Image (tube, rainbow, N blue to C red; front, side):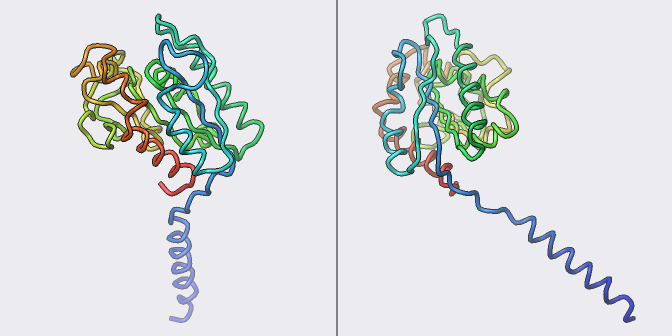
Length: 227
Protein backbone atom coordinates (compact mmCIF):
# COMPACT_ATOMS: atom_id res chain seq x y z
CA UNK A 1 0.00 0.00 0.00
CA UNK A 2 2.70 2.49 1.00
CA UNK A 3 4.82 1.58 -2.02
CA UNK A 4 2.11 2.98 -4.29
CA UNK A 5 2.05 6.42 -2.65
CA UNK A 6 5.09 7.83 -4.51
CA UNK A 7 3.55 6.78 -7.81
CA UNK A 8 0.24 8.39 -6.91
CA UNK A 9 2.03 11.54 -5.78
CA UNK A 10 4.10 11.62 -8.97
CA UNK A 11 1.00 11.23 -11.11
CA UNK A 12 -0.73 14.02 -9.22
CA UNK A 13 2.24 16.35 -9.61
CA UNK A 14 2.55 15.48 -13.30
CA UNK A 15 -1.12 16.28 -13.95
CA UNK A 16 -0.77 19.49 -12.00
CA UNK A 17 2.27 20.51 -14.05
CA UNK A 18 0.51 19.71 -17.33
CA UNK A 19 -2.48 21.71 -16.24
CA UNK A 20 -0.30 24.68 -15.36
CA UNK A 21 1.62 24.49 -18.64
CA UNK A 22 -1.62 24.28 -20.59
CA UNK A 23 -2.81 27.63 -19.24
CA UNK A 24 -2.28 30.28 -21.93
CA UNK A 25 0.16 32.98 -20.90
CA UNK A 26 -0.73 36.61 -21.43
CA UNK A 27 1.17 37.98 -24.41
CA UNK A 28 3.69 40.67 -23.70
CA UNK A 29 2.94 44.17 -24.92
CA UNK A 30 5.01 45.48 -27.83
CA UNK A 31 7.52 48.17 -26.87
CA UNK A 32 8.69 48.76 -30.45
CA UNK A 33 6.59 48.31 -33.55
CA UNK A 34 6.31 49.34 -37.18
CA UNK A 35 3.08 49.79 -39.13
CA UNK A 36 3.59 48.74 -42.74
CA UNK A 37 1.01 50.78 -44.67
CA UNK A 38 0.26 49.71 -48.27
CA UNK A 39 -1.77 52.22 -50.27
CA UNK A 40 -4.41 51.65 -52.92
CA UNK A 41 -4.48 52.21 -56.67
CA UNK A 42 -3.64 55.75 -57.72
CA UNK A 43 -2.62 56.99 -54.28
CA UNK A 44 0.76 58.76 -54.34
CA UNK A 45 3.77 57.09 -52.74
CA UNK A 46 3.46 57.55 -49.00
CA UNK A 47 0.79 56.80 -46.41
CA UNK A 48 -2.63 55.65 -47.55
CA UNK A 49 -5.56 57.94 -46.86
CA UNK A 50 -7.37 54.86 -45.57
CA UNK A 51 -5.22 54.66 -42.43
CA UNK A 52 -4.15 58.22 -41.59
CA UNK A 53 -6.65 58.72 -38.76
CA UNK A 54 -6.33 55.29 -37.18
CA UNK A 55 -2.54 55.33 -37.37
CA UNK A 56 -2.42 58.68 -35.63
CA UNK A 57 -4.70 57.25 -32.94
CA UNK A 58 -2.68 54.04 -32.61
CA UNK A 59 0.63 55.82 -32.27
CA UNK A 60 -0.79 58.21 -29.67
CA UNK A 61 -2.11 55.30 -27.60
CA UNK A 62 0.85 52.90 -27.95
CA UNK A 63 4.33 54.37 -27.69
CA UNK A 64 7.36 53.08 -29.59
CA UNK A 65 5.72 53.07 -33.00
CA UNK A 66 6.97 53.90 -36.47
CA UNK A 67 5.40 53.75 -39.92
CA UNK A 68 6.75 52.38 -43.18
CA UNK A 69 4.93 53.08 -46.44
CA UNK A 70 5.28 50.21 -48.88
CA UNK A 71 7.20 51.15 -52.02
CA UNK A 72 5.44 50.03 -55.20
CA UNK A 73 3.69 51.64 -58.19
CA UNK A 74 0.03 51.07 -57.11
CA UNK A 75 -0.73 51.39 -60.81
CA UNK A 76 -3.92 50.90 -62.75
CA UNK A 77 -2.70 47.57 -64.12
CA UNK A 78 -3.21 46.09 -60.62
CA UNK A 79 0.21 44.41 -60.57
CA UNK A 80 0.95 44.53 -56.85
CA UNK A 81 3.81 42.00 -56.90
CA UNK A 82 6.47 44.62 -56.18
CA UNK A 83 4.46 45.69 -53.15
CA UNK A 84 4.26 42.11 -51.92
CA UNK A 85 8.02 41.71 -52.20
CA UNK A 86 8.61 45.02 -50.43
CA UNK A 87 6.34 44.04 -47.54
CA UNK A 88 8.10 40.70 -47.06
CA UNK A 89 11.54 42.31 -47.26
CA UNK A 90 10.62 44.98 -44.71
CA UNK A 91 9.21 42.48 -42.22
CA UNK A 92 12.35 40.36 -42.51
CA UNK A 93 14.73 43.29 -42.10
CA UNK A 94 12.90 44.62 -39.04
CA UNK A 95 12.86 41.26 -37.27
CA UNK A 96 16.40 40.32 -38.27
CA UNK A 97 17.61 43.58 -36.74
CA UNK A 98 15.57 43.12 -33.54
CA UNK A 99 13.74 39.90 -32.73
CA UNK A 100 11.45 41.72 -30.29
CA UNK A 101 10.20 44.19 -32.90
CA UNK A 102 6.46 43.95 -33.60
CA UNK A 103 4.82 44.55 -36.96
CA UNK A 104 1.35 45.64 -38.10
CA UNK A 105 0.30 45.14 -41.73
CA UNK A 106 -2.30 47.41 -43.35
CA UNK A 107 -3.60 47.42 -46.90
CA UNK A 108 -6.23 49.37 -48.81
CA UNK A 109 -7.66 48.05 -52.10
CA UNK A 110 -4.70 47.01 -54.30
CA UNK A 111 -2.58 47.44 -51.17
CA UNK A 112 -4.76 44.87 -49.45
CA UNK A 113 -4.09 42.42 -52.29
CA UNK A 114 -0.35 43.05 -52.00
CA UNK A 115 -0.58 42.36 -48.27
CA UNK A 116 -2.70 39.21 -48.59
CA UNK A 117 -0.30 37.78 -51.16
CA UNK A 118 2.60 38.39 -48.78
CA UNK A 119 1.04 36.46 -45.88
CA UNK A 120 1.81 32.87 -47.01
CA UNK A 121 5.47 33.87 -47.39
CA UNK A 122 5.78 35.35 -43.89
CA UNK A 123 6.58 32.36 -41.69
CA UNK A 124 8.43 31.33 -38.53
CA UNK A 125 9.78 34.19 -36.44
CA UNK A 126 8.50 36.69 -39.00
CA UNK A 127 4.95 35.35 -38.63
CA UNK A 128 5.29 35.62 -34.85
CA UNK A 129 6.40 39.24 -35.13
CA UNK A 130 3.30 40.33 -37.06
CA UNK A 131 0.66 41.09 -34.45
CA UNK A 132 -2.15 42.47 -36.59
CA UNK A 133 -3.35 42.65 -40.19
CA UNK A 134 -5.99 45.26 -41.03
CA UNK A 135 -7.42 45.41 -44.54
CA UNK A 136 -10.06 47.60 -46.18
CA UNK A 137 -11.69 47.17 -49.58
CA UNK A 138 -9.79 43.94 -50.22
CA UNK A 139 -10.15 42.57 -53.79
CA UNK A 140 -9.06 39.16 -52.46
CA UNK A 141 -11.81 39.13 -49.79
CA UNK A 142 -12.48 35.44 -49.21
CA UNK A 143 -16.07 34.69 -48.20
CA UNK A 144 -17.07 33.39 -44.76
CA UNK A 145 -13.82 33.86 -42.88
CA UNK A 146 -14.11 34.66 -39.18
CA UNK A 147 -12.06 37.83 -39.75
CA UNK A 148 -14.52 39.26 -42.28
CA UNK A 149 -16.37 42.25 -40.83
CA UNK A 150 -18.20 45.38 -41.91
CA UNK A 151 -17.06 48.80 -40.66
CA UNK A 152 -19.12 48.35 -37.50
CA UNK A 153 -17.48 45.02 -36.73
CA UNK A 154 -20.63 43.18 -37.81
CA UNK A 155 -21.23 40.32 -40.21
CA UNK A 156 -23.23 41.97 -43.00
CA UNK A 157 -20.40 41.37 -45.50
CA UNK A 158 -18.98 38.17 -44.02
CA UNK A 159 -19.99 36.16 -47.09
CA UNK A 160 -18.86 38.79 -49.61
CA UNK A 161 -16.52 37.80 -52.43
CA UNK A 162 -13.73 40.08 -53.64
CA UNK A 163 -13.56 41.05 -57.27
CA UNK A 164 -10.22 39.21 -57.68
CA UNK A 165 -11.02 36.16 -55.57
CA UNK A 166 -11.67 33.02 -57.64
CA UNK A 167 -11.66 30.25 -55.06
CA UNK A 168 -7.95 30.26 -54.23
CA UNK A 169 -5.82 32.58 -52.17
CA UNK A 170 -7.25 35.06 -49.72
CA UNK A 171 -6.18 35.28 -46.09
CA UNK A 172 -4.58 31.93 -45.06
CA UNK A 173 -6.25 30.07 -42.19
CA UNK A 174 -3.32 30.57 -39.81
CA UNK A 175 -3.60 34.34 -40.26
CA UNK A 176 -7.33 34.69 -39.58
CA UNK A 177 -6.97 35.23 -35.81
CA UNK A 178 -4.52 38.08 -36.45
CA UNK A 179 -6.65 39.78 -39.09
CA UNK A 180 -9.65 41.97 -39.79
CA UNK A 181 -10.79 42.18 -43.42
CA UNK A 182 -13.20 45.11 -43.54
CA UNK A 183 -15.76 45.44 -46.34
CA UNK A 184 -18.79 47.71 -46.55
CA UNK A 185 -21.92 46.73 -48.46
CA UNK A 186 -21.84 48.28 -51.92
CA UNK A 187 -18.06 48.19 -52.25
CA UNK A 188 -17.67 46.42 -55.58
CA UNK A 189 -14.00 45.64 -54.96
CA UNK A 190 -14.47 43.50 -51.86
CA UNK A 191 -18.13 42.60 -52.42
CA UNK A 192 -18.85 41.95 -56.07
CA UNK A 193 -22.34 40.79 -55.11
CA UNK A 194 -23.36 44.28 -53.96
CA UNK A 195 -21.29 46.64 -56.11
CA UNK A 196 -19.48 46.96 -59.40
CA UNK A 197 -15.80 47.81 -59.09
CA UNK A 198 -14.72 51.07 -57.51
CA UNK A 199 -17.85 52.59 -56.01
CA UNK A 200 -18.52 55.46 -53.62
CA UNK A 201 -18.56 52.88 -50.84
CA UNK A 202 -15.07 51.70 -51.80
CA UNK A 203 -13.82 55.25 -51.31
CA UNK A 204 -15.62 55.75 -48.00
CA UNK A 205 -13.17 54.11 -45.56
CA UNK A 206 -10.83 57.08 -44.94
CA UNK A 207 -13.72 59.22 -43.68
CA UNK A 208 -15.64 56.41 -42.00
CA UNK A 209 -15.44 56.95 -38.24
CA UNK A 210 -16.60 53.38 -37.51
CA UNK A 211 -13.80 51.99 -39.73
CA UNK A 212 -11.17 54.20 -38.12
CA UNK A 213 -12.38 53.37 -34.61
CA UNK A 214 -12.50 49.66 -35.42
CA UNK A 215 -8.95 49.70 -36.77
CA UNK A 216 -7.64 51.66 -33.81
CA UNK A 217 -9.21 49.36 -31.23
CA UNK A 218 -8.13 46.18 -33.04
CA UNK A 219 -4.50 47.16 -33.59
CA UNK A 220 -4.04 48.69 -30.14
CA UNK A 221 -5.40 45.53 -28.53
CA UNK A 222 -3.03 43.34 -30.55
CA UNK A 223 -0.01 45.52 -29.76
CA UNK A 224 -0.83 45.61 -26.05
CA UNK A 225 -1.50 41.87 -25.95
CA UNK A 226 -5.04 42.32 -24.65
CA UNK A 227 -6.96 40.88 -27.61
